[in-house]
Length: 251
Image (cartoon, rainbow, N blue to C red; front, side):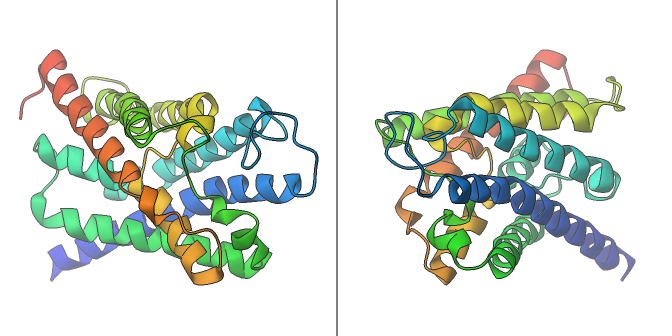
């Protein structure tokens, strides 16, 4: 019974942590689109974030995500590890740093948290958060192919997972600034590659807004969802194995 309660608490932490991530981060993306609606575009992009404010849009969104990630880690890191990302959970399991029996409960909790975040956001802001803001969903930008999207998501998630392995998993490194640095890596990836794929890093971060759009009349982007599964999972697994090898971690 005690083990079940422990897993329940971990899953609840993952749910709330992912809720924070999507509500604040994807919410910032949705609000950016709402603010830009009806304005004259200042770039070659006819739709989407970055069309009005350029890199400034992504800077603001990146900071919002960085704060959300860092806060979640400091709140829940000691309870669940604060994966808040199915790709991280799968990669840690792949290098034997996470029990297989907890993978599905963790991922389920992350997806539920992301969905609740998008649902609450639309409930508070109104349906325009979905119809005009797309619930802050990630999507390929003009001129970016499916393969390029997968590669970008793999690369940025690779950077994120290397950071997690070094600062959160490796017991030899100091932990005081782990949450801050991990959050900043997410923010930097969003600022740099937001105008490529929306810079998800995270299947749950994309899933919640996609489902929110389905429920509330936003754009149907499900055809692109595999990009945000394949890319992050591949990038995270490669990083986890590579760091384990380079750092000489025991498996």
